[in-house]
Length: 250
Image 1 (tube, rainbow, N blue to C red):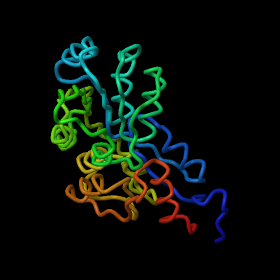
Image 2: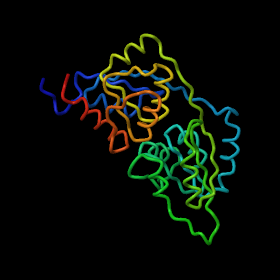
Image 3: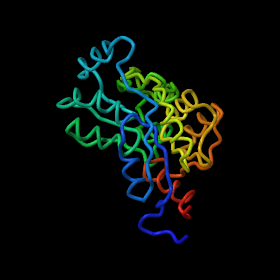
């Protein structure tokens, strides 16, 4: 079958698992894919109802930096940062877009690749002779502490705060059947891969495609066999990897 260059995923079905359809879903659809959206994560307040987060957001004037690692984190933090003399860093361009829209100011640091290690490397060097810059790092409850540890190692005074909690959403049997019948499953985060394993198990479509090495690691550690990992760790890179993997047509 000849593939339409403008719609290289025509005739292919791809399952996504984020809480809400977003840029990933729209870009896959733009490429011609039949997007099967099966949300496996629900976002809610931290265990304390967000009290600690509200406390830290109420004293943002004491911080030099705010770092958010996801669009949800940006949604929870950046409205409070509006008007404060803060520098902002994000992991990923999508997160940067949300942060800029809600914070009303440009983001100062966005790494070229959507990796926490790249964010740490992109942060300005700290003058060892001066005071440590105070940094508020807002993450999900399941976040790996490696980012906070690496920032501390670079000289930042890091306050790690849980901005939100992710909970497993168990799919209906119809959703499960549709997910397993798709040509590919795509994971844009380690928590998405872990949620798939917890909700559905080790069964998966023929192709399992990951946004980057940390997501691939989480998937394989939870029994999933990853077919391809994006070399450009962004939504665009993930979509390009899906096209390379499936784009030859049914």
